[in-house]
Amino acid sequence: KKWVARFKTGHFGTEDEDHPGRPLLVSVPENVDIVHSKILADRRVSAKKIAQALEISRKRVGYIIHDVLDMRKLSAEWVPKCFNANQKRDRVVASRTILEQFRRNTAGFLARLVTTDETWIYLYDSETKEQSKKKFRTQKSASKLMASIFWDKDGILLVHYFEKGATIIASYYTSLGQSEAGTGLQTVEEALTRSVVPPGQRFLTHGSNRTAEVG
Image (cartoon, rainbow, N blue to C red; front, side, top):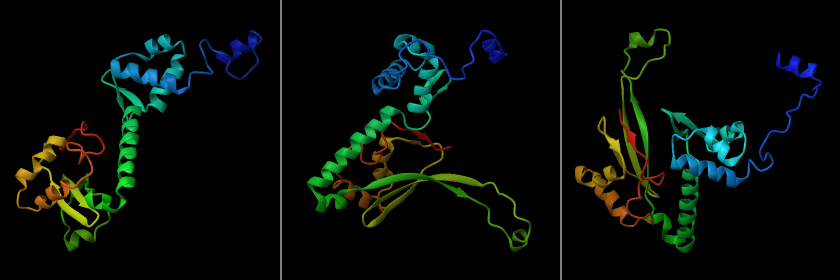
């Protein structure tokens, strides 16, 4: 019906016509930064209000939010689907800082670096010989737990298993030495005294503000 109505009025073009605003400028980094700043200032701000403030189309604002900033609305608030632009910039700054430290002290850099990451470990019930003869069927895991692995250039220093319901933040790792004393974490603590990463940021290079619930 839309196209029939257009053709009846003499509009036979199939390309989008010009829209109000500044179409040639809407994708410039300045507009992306402004949209991002407005969202950080007010997580509940609407795309319509942002479009009015920037004098660009609501569709373009939606493109910037969803495709450029990679955010979506959850419970009426804008949240990043993965890493938002601000988090990506933080990682660029951190990477450049580490690279500069590496260039200043190449020989000792790797000896002073400790890395960690978390992963889920899924537990399954073992099968009997009779069960294994049956037709393959996807089996749900009986349980799961989260593990944090610490390693340096020489290999793994520690594998720590989190308690169910634990909240993983920077302070959790700080207290880890007290709860795991004598189980190998002292090696990690000794390594951390050599770490080139500033205190409080040694473990969570992906951002100490990140919090994960182990459920």
